[in-house]
Length: 262
Image 1 (cartoon, rainbow, N blue to C red):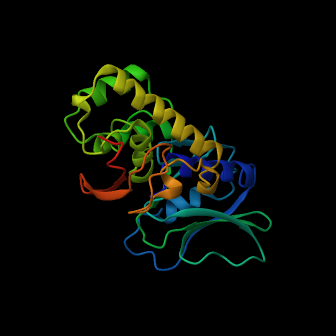
Image 2: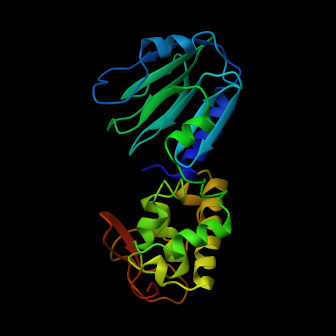
């Protein structure tokens, strides 16, 4: 599932390609049963508008203007926002499109139908209504440490709790724990203050790097987990002679190195 770095890369794409263009139409694609998309009245509200701002909170992307309305997009497991210009062909599995004046189009490609597009009035009100936690790149250290240190859930599961910390999912939680040498099933409540601080620092470092490279995994350091995330691969950590493996933690597949993560 696209997480904070992937969604930030998408936000940047929208900022670069879709702002200050008049919307001629907002339309639904094909095969749209069982996916949450705007209705006719909501689509009509977008016609004639211009998007002038982008925002992101956790895994949620917002495109709109000070006076609204906004659209919010959640990419789900495999969704992606793809700007293109005619006469380029529309991406397959397009479930929603915005037709801008001229040749520019924006397609929401969502093969597995697990994402959504909504028309909303205000991002802050939406974030509050969904009870999302602080964004992982803006959460205060004390808030993070108090939550994680008081959690009796597996630390991987706690990091992925969107109501407490918004933006971290399966992939980047594994990287954070790989960097800190923690077993993904270990409880946050078992950690001392200095280890909790280390997790916070690793979270900021890894997510910030993911943002800098715009979620291009080939540009991540070679000694990180993500570029090597395959069971039975050699652990890329310097000086570690372990092998990567995986197991279920809180219903999700966790990749880690049992030699240095404990």
